[in-house]
Length: 274
Image (cartoon, rainbow, N blue to C red; front, side, top):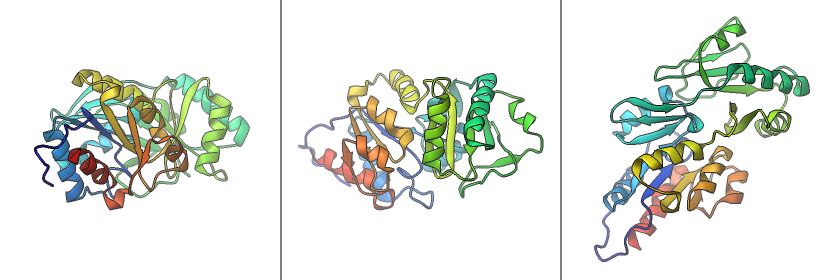
């Protein structure tokens, strides 16, 4: 797109976008229109930062394919990653003893859970136990026969699933049971996660923004799932996609078109025109 040189200045210094269901279309690509709108926003002086629930090992190939070289907030805020340098700048791990206690308490309330864990680091594996339902997508996993293997190395999150409860009900039950010990988020279909207490996308985004010299008041954020709620609370303006979860839409400042219909570009183009 082309912008009018006489148009008002772009009103934000930082454009924060979730990845799945937001920046990426359902086929895992970013449209030419959205790429062009983001390029125009950065040319107008804004930084673009990706903020995703994915941990670095299954984010970095997407960033490489996009030619993205800036900072990315990964792992629900636990990791700040420099895509251009392929370097992990910060990483927060989950206390494994505390996680085990939290899981025991949740299972005492709802019954047995299927588990998976995301190991820390640039090459951290995702280990899954028998019965864990994998979603379609880029998540590469290793099946473990002995659940004790899950706890053998530092982790940044634990995934939980229940044979009878849906994602929202499981997240609600877990939060009610262990919300004082750990954070529990619903990040997508089949993706309910246990995280360090107090960790959110807003945590990682604030750290990355500080590195860029940008404040919350300078930020517009785009997302689609309940795990984006803290990011919307931190940013000056939160934009939910048309395909977003109802909980996120309820707190959004604006609702745009879906990820399949260039919802990010729709908003940025209007802002660029002033």
